[in-house]
Image (cartoon, rainbow, N blue to C red; front, side, top):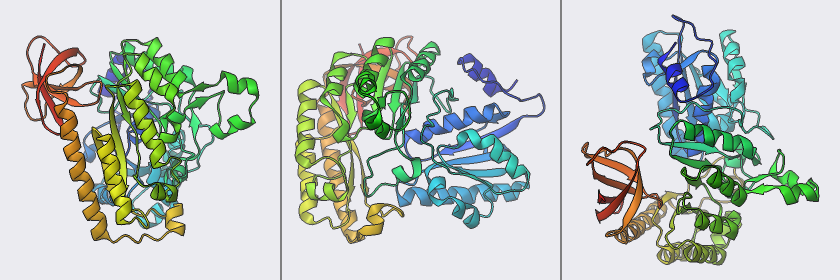
Length: 478
């Protein structure tokens, strides 16, 4: 029995493998992009474990190499192409029968072009086709091009128990929705991950219970838009409009799901990502405020501070509506940390639009954020119907201004924590000092503190904050 299978059995994973002594196949898998991709790779590892594949961190010993890809930005795709070149060099140098496959959003976007452009790629698999991997591998063995990028209307992998790859044994991802219906003009996700559908809440609760029984202390409920979770029996969310009034009355929205998980496991710390402002309703805020095991942290992508640009992006909120939501968060959850996504240099963005983004940042004073210069993505409405007419030099200058402002705001928010005491979940050793623990508080801030006393990973401890940087809180255990 392989080490991987032993470990998974210890974690309570119900994996049935076909591995035999002396006939172990090795899987090397890398993930790029969002947290959904990370969780999808865990699903892939589970599917392939049944086919006798054990995961490895050593590329050179792999029989099968898979890269789970991201198409959200051009830079991400360039990074992935460089990794594929690396895989191919290893394959040639080793003279082994290594198979190479591309998974995820980039696979869905490029489809057969991948097999044509990258001659040494053996299979291309979209986000909804991971169950088909065993069949695709057989096609490769038969000398055929193996590709399945068909998007599903109901696939949620709700019955698959993910293999926790590179897990710290403390925190885990639990996917609750797949796909997206928002159709933002800059975004490829609806085209690469399909329409939005929600997962059966009972399968979510089962996975969370399994994690707790295996000593996990924190989960993150994942979705391209977690707040739009809506369960009424399965299928696409848009089909609810066709459902009976009874189904609508008995449906479970995100606030109800959040409450169900919080009540089921009152000692499990709960986070969620990502939110879309127009789906973040007040009942969700009240649920967060009601339960102490739901973290006081919301990632709330705004993308721009200009209503004109938001309209061109097809975002379903305005600057004014976003500010009202921020005000409600501050009122209902006073200790809540807020982070953002911002895109600068979108089509036709003027200096006035840019200044509106900066002024919104001043109003909110986000705890931290993710900031990018706009890059046109093939297939999106913006690429088809809008002109990417903001010069690169201006994009870079505006991005620098946004990053610098966020650094100032991050420091301000961190300084507000100095002198306060927080409950921190230990999730590892500090990268800079092996004599210090690191963890996160409810507000998702990284906290480091000396290793004093018989504490271990997975413990909750109270830490008094004594100093900080813009990125880290430093303290001592109380």
